[in-house]
Length: 443
Length: 111
Image (tube, rainbow over all chains, first blue to last red; front, side, top):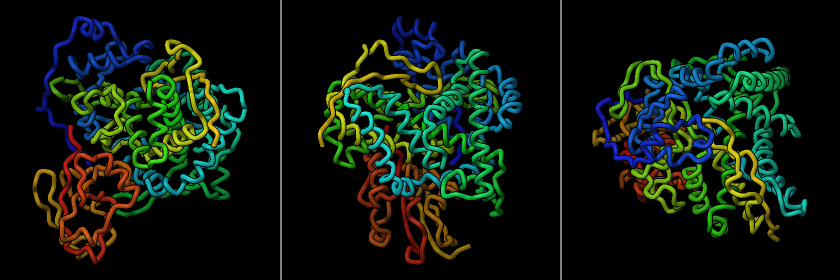
């Protein structure tokens, strides 16, 4: 339910150490070192300046759990549509848009990245495809896909792989390709296209990389448009066809067909959101399994206990949230937790920090599957824009964890931890490549 | 307009009585449409977020029934406020048999 934010609420600021003061003064979420290892920066903001203006980014960073929750519950004061639009190809939006109009079959604004009441009807349509019960029906087939991807890597027999490039990325792409009804064997293209789309909200592009990415997005759109045109003529049993033929229900009960442009944006969003962030979660899983003492043993101990495995996955999403921060824009001047924010200001809800808020999750860096309030984490956001694919994402990560534990053992990082590279972006915290060694676990 | 009756006590302790509830509507939809405090329904009724958590009153527990495995898994994520009579409002659809149902909205999982 949308509620208007209370402007009276303030919570205590804590004293910072000299080191933290300096980090706040000099640090920025645009700094790639901070993006890769952000926790100290998050802690300094959360304690001393919870709604922190990041001058280099030109964004207000919302870092406490209570403030993230309050902001996302008021979609009218804090607009996703304007926030997303401002963040997209930041500073180069007009050129990006013109490029896609000329080369990509059109510019298709994201229908789901919108505000109520328009958002409400689009959202309702997408929700029907992603209920936990529908997702559960997909579990056997997804298990087959995931088992196959991991088995192929294990059967190569050399006991090494790139856990991100050989497993996490192809696995999630194969699942969403099957859901949508796209062509198999296009993992490499889809992976490149996904990175290009996600880069648009990463705030880290130069003009040159923006144009390279726009060229990839144009290819993606041309591919999707051709597929969708074919579905218009010959309906198929998949999500693309569902979206091409979908009707939305208006508040007065009347029905209206989605426009083709809306449908393109929703297919594109499903494809990208459905693989990039989930792949990141699985990449992060390999990372913790190979670097945190006791994690692999803990996974082994819960793998056959559905309840404990669900808790393990939820704590993993809290502890290593794939989506770091998403955008909002103020539609009026507003005070959040004692900090006055002007109208039309860009904000980032820093989920990575909210999930580490000690006032909600004591000892946040401890991995604890017995937490009694795991459901409060904000890895999926919250409020009316809470991730619509959350049940599918959870299930894919769970199935991956189960298959990793069943097929692989004695996993170890094959490079020094300090050499792990993260994608330069404010939007996600994504490991680009993770070489590991392992042994085959005999069934 | 339907004819079924539902009483919901919200998180602030205010009681809302609805006596024109249609068959087929879920308690989450009913609560959200009427601004019942504490019913958010973020995931839209997908049994995937536990923001429409209610306690079913003693007399109704048997008729409403137990959560299935999927619903239980979500309730387990708010274990600190979960009770034996916990259900997700999105998973309870109104039928004639539930005419007169009484529930209390559960508080959010703690800080």
